[in-house]
Length: 208
Image 1: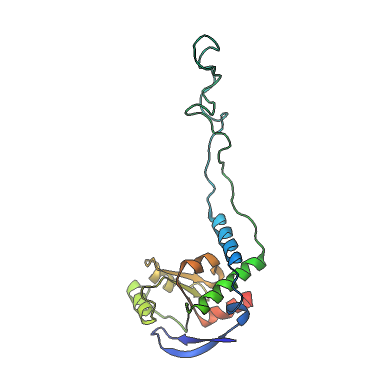
Image 2: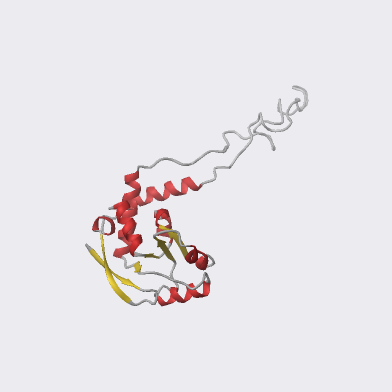
């Protein structure tokens, strides 16, 4: 079992916690991390790009000019793809870019990123964060006391924490997620990861 210090919101060490090596000291598999990131981003794509075929373009019903005698190339319709304003050949149409990925691949990628954060000393465990009110100023004080000032930080709470979320939502360097929303892409986007003891227990249940 790997051990990590537990600090309070003032940045003082108050305890240690044991981490499951199957989750936080797993083999780092970069190829699986890449597959999961591509899977996540594909699911987020709107897929709303759309073009009209020659049959959907307005107009084009009558022949632009007679077949012979004008000196110009023959033309049957102005909706032809070779005409400006005509239809598009093999253009994009609304569709979903999502694809399926096995659960064991997604879990292995999560273990890889968690293990990477721990090995690079980018994982912090805090006992609790209690704010008197949902104010950015109060959150910033705690953020600095914990030694996180200047870092992009992802906080993963054991359950939805409305106070923490509202007090940090104006800070572009900070994101607060409940443990159910823990994902590979967001962990990679932020330099440091802050977990709570209850969060770690739920991660062990999910990935251990």
